[in-house]
Length: 167
Image 1 (cartoon, rainbow, N blue to C red):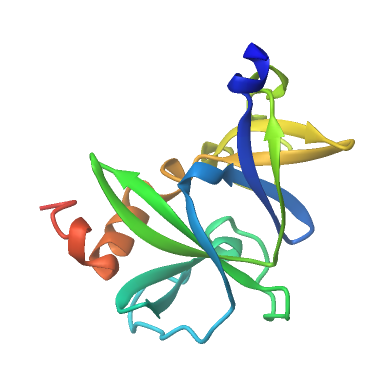
Image 2: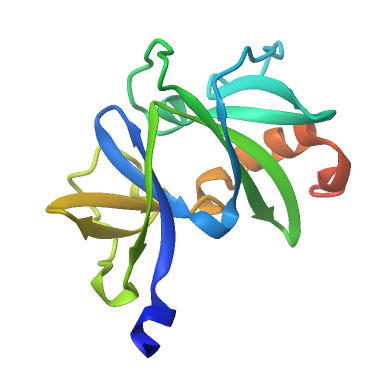
């Protein structure tokens, strides 16, 4: 029973036929794709913002952020709304995914370090590699994937509790 308590739950999703995961504790909700309002003169990975029950939520295109080819939206395209930590503050961000798969538990002992080479994604964003049903899953460090200029841009768009992020 002690080992079960150590297992972490991850939300798995797909980008360009690769499986990724984020800690489910950081996921607020999953939305069907809705129109995103573009913001002029933002980075290419910034898809824009959505109105989520009266709050402005910035949306990042993870394909572009990771250097993967852009794709058209489909019926499976969704926005994963997550909490991001930066400089001791929390803000909410949406991330586009081709599709969401499932929530699964991975024992930390079965998660290996991120590879230094051989991945199509910048491995600085990857906290580890898990394996489930003979398939590798890239576990993302969502805080690290948005460090530096990305976090600053998103924090400015998010407003509210993140206004003081880079004061």
